[in-house]
Amino acid sequence: MASLAGVSIGGGESSEAQVAQEIMKSWSFIEGFIADNNLAVELFAAEGWDKGSNTLEINKDTYDTETKTWLVENDATGMVGLANELGSV
Image 1 (cartoon, rainbow, N blue to C red):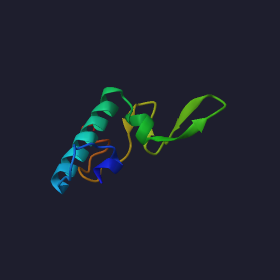
Image 2: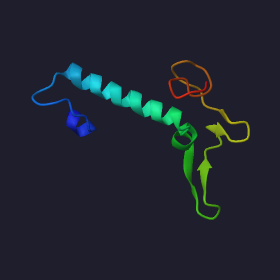
Image 3: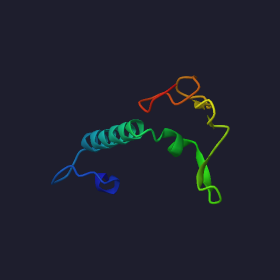
């Protein structure tokens, strides 16, 4: 199963706990990469590409590009925005 996620845990069989740990590590890396490179808007609010203007189309119900604020409520916290390691709330 880990090999399907691109995770190498070494030789032999692995326990479910080892697989879970490797998956959590990979998510931690991805979340850090997104935050470090300020990619949250592009990944979570994009809805298309405008070929004419050569720009990313942002879902106006998800993110306000003028005020640079999230407009969605986080189910886990009840707060507006992305509330996790990815940055702003």
